[in-house]
Length: 428
Image (cartoon, rainbow, N blue to C red; front, side):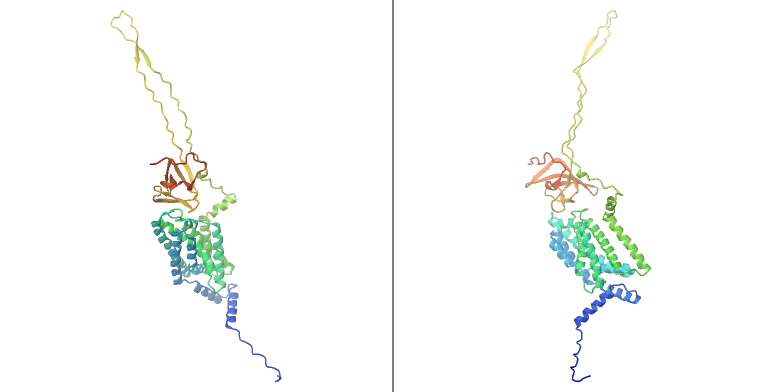
């Protein structure tokens, strides 16, 4: 080496940030495929299980989120509902449940499923307590509760995206998947809390509860099925007979739940022509308030007097008997009369807000039951009342095989044929 040449500059050591970024890339590359070596596969599975194992934060944040969601339904506030979802816990135990199904690990499955059940129960109790509190403020507008206790195609699309993103983010990255978890919590916790709120309030039984619980079950089955499918695409295949059996049985059960309780199977059969569509509801048939035509009854002809000829014998045999005319009193003939009774009117509920309407014990009285839009009621003709400028209609309906009779606001009812006299009679 020539001493006159300058010495080469010392090579700089990589910074910790660069080393950390390079290590993260290496870990991501290792997770791009499911390791075939048994030791590496066990190490990767143990690492994911440690991250997915539930902690006390799951229950603390579930408690806070359940209280906020219950207040959101109580005040019918969409902002409070969104805030409750933002503080909801990370649903990593749900990913742990999917991993345990693929790996055939019954102990991990029981632990993660129990933690997920307790978290869901806390959310349900938050809605239940808020429902009991709402009894002090009835009547209330329950737009949000009705909205989130129904199955919507858009919700299934959001749920699919959330389930896929949270699975990929959890496996491929060390960061916490907050945004995908919020999407999943939105579709799971909102209908669950709505079900608790409907049960506690007693309003909308059969419309909010247990419909919200049913939507929660369908959403959970839908998300779990897509989570398992995403793990398959990430090359997390069952490697044991137990894992293969648990994965197959679980997928079959999840698909059956979705098809049966979402009415998806009937929709497919109707579209493919294998089944006939259901008949139109009675409410869509034209109903009129005009009494049905009655057949006229023609009375039989009557006579004013009835005359009979009676032979009266005399004591003298030589005399010829003389017929005597005897006049009988006129008989009274009854003419049957028929009283025309108005035909009951079938109406359909079309409330502009709230998703339904109340049947009250009396005008502005206590709520008996809540019926959703599309439900049918029977109007009692010629029985209307006007209270403070609001017209109330006497109606009855069958709810859970029981007749419920009460009063509803006229503006939430729609009939196929206009009613001739839709004004209340004068009341004292």
